Image (cartoon, rainbow, N blue to C red; front, side, top):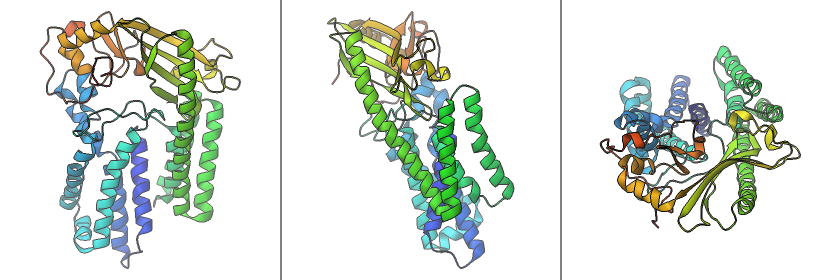
Length: 406
């Protein structure tokens, strides 16, 4: 997920923990406790992304693909990150140091917030098509949620309208409310969202704000969390339906093929529009195919031609439910030989879920078609004689099935 979402989740966590604790007798200590919980939640929910400093260890794009969402995005390495965060708090903040030393309840709350913040970062990252491998080194396989877009306005709106009114400064309150009100309008005007989506976000904002004003801050935060959880649940149901329709369409487009995977990426705040990819083998004995397309679950209301073009919509297809955008068929033997002979490709295949190999360039179709370079694009032919990339984390190969491994 984007770091605004991670930050809002961390702040909401800190506020909820603070409001679950007994009110302190000393107001000054109470202010320190609240600030410590908010800062701990904020930092813990962003700490795992510090792995971006490791990306220069490998040539682009492999540094980003291998080392981002890497070791810091595992449950095992969450523990030293919590220790580092608490150590920095202890060393750099005398008021928090006194609080940690003298108040057992606050100490437990801050440590728990740090641990839960790390877990929430991994959990939110697991919701999208990019994936995580949280159980490494015990299980280095990638896990994918395929549920929400990596920048999700529903989370911004729900959490933002619950948190902004809780700011101590009036200026910060209005700045926060203004930001979270204006951004969806701007995204819609730029073509990233549909006007119907904007109306839905406005309804979420009004519901969360009403709960907070009438029932208190805790009710506002609870309403925000309920909206986020409800949205994820809707996406899960919609994604299940989408996979069924894509399988049926693929059976017509490529009869006799066997589907291995259907990565899904929803459009922002839009359960009806989905970008998708397919990975399949056959019908020829030594072939595999990768495809990408766009699907609408309600073509009568929102055909693929109405899905926002900024995120892969397909203009010019009125009333259609599904549009294929690209297809590629390759030899399995050639893929396996390339993996053995080109160590840059071997490293890249530790990330690529939908591998496209065309004219000496590799691209993961989850993030764009060939000819539209993205952060996953690797010019592998030009690196055939280059030294093998190192250090290389031993993540599982997403397409171990194509490579002939169990």
